[in-house]
Amino acid sequence: MKPWIRTGTFWSGVVMVALGADQLTVTGKTHEGSFQSYEDNRFHFMTVKGRFVKEHASRVVKLVLEHPKKASYRTADAAKEETALFKGYDKRKFIFATGGKDIIIQQAKMKTIELIMDEGWAGAGGGEFGGNRYPIPQVDIQTLSRGPMTPAQRTALNQFNTAKAAYDEFVAKSSAMVAEMDRLTGAKREDLLNQLRIRKNEEQPLKNALLAAYKALTAAFAEAEGE
Image 1: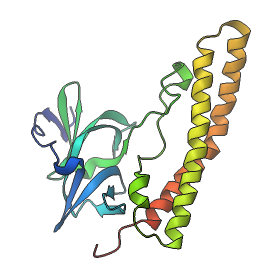
Image 2: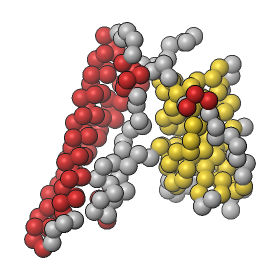
Image 3: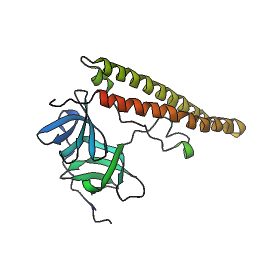
Image 4: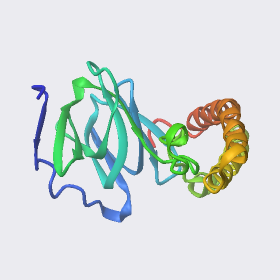
């Protein structure tokens, strides 16, 4: 076992969060909303006010989640990412759980954390069509749409909605095709399998467009200084 990882029950009793939301406590302030990801030493977080914040780890005191969330993470010296339940962050330590035990990783060792939301066609068909994950964190569109918006915000939101609808429609159709393939045999199954392989390549531009739209959305709805 690596010296910066230990197991135990360090995080027991800390996962209850008021108001049914995640809480990100920084120096002098607590954000309520939903954890999005961790990258470049920054916690990405969407507040209940519909604003995105990126707080540097040096300012973050604690992250308490409403409930543990399935996530992938990669440490600075790891050859590949790991998957576990993400439970939160406290005293410069990230807490995960797997196999009924807690895994504690020092902040200095953490590189990235991404929440895992399975795509519609990931669970069907198995094999080469299994294991996909949704490319962006979950976004509360209703919260973002609440209240007045600047023209730039409205444009970013419309572009995001368009990109997301196109991607979701594509995935839904692929999911239906996988389900149909599982009922077929012989040449018909092989033909549908080849179509799905082609669709995997066609999916990438739509995924890239969604990622770009999400990035633009977080910039347009970034929390202003002093909020």
